[in-house]
Image (cartoon, rainbow, N blue to C red):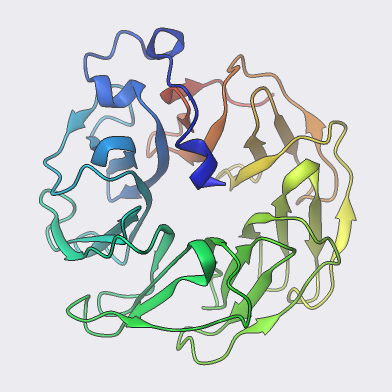
Length: 301
């Protein structure tokens, strides 16, 4: 789905952060993460932006590429990676202050990255692209998780180290931190999934096209559908420190759960454009990243 986001128009004048003087904070942003007390977000034209005040102001960082950047992940407060189109993999060893190019293969298009520790990471993307490193990114090795060349959209990890990969045509894979074998755990829906949100030792939800949301309570070996009032595309999910779970994606599509994802209700925070990522800032502020850059949202009631 992040491939489709790059074709959306970015209307900066609509952004709720219109007072922010950094144009990159009002352009298309596709992923974000916390790094200690800071936030770092990435998006179109190679933009890398950072905030040290929970998203009130942003700084544009130097980037070695103009390719669209789609995913960011940190192993700790120093070591992190960014991936993007044109087979871009960037690395930092100083908490995101500076970024260097580790891979640039224009035949590839990466959509997400997961840092497992300072030496191990996995990058995934279009047409089954999957690369791993076990030496901090000095070398990246191409792997194959599926027989078919299906898009792999997002990679996440649970607290116990279980790694999940969501992709098109109902693709849901799980593996361990060593990434040696990949086990399919399909819910039965044959459309695209855009992510898995681990909720506890044995519980997770997955989400995708047309409002398809599934929940598992047995370590993701079986899934049960969760109904949404509107069948909207769900691109991202976040669990707040309060325990509230929020789903978002298609314009105006927001859903909230206060019962560990068993049920969801519609929510209207006032944002009318598409969202690629939700993030709770260090001070508790809820931020949405997407079609119009970064937007500060009210907290669900």
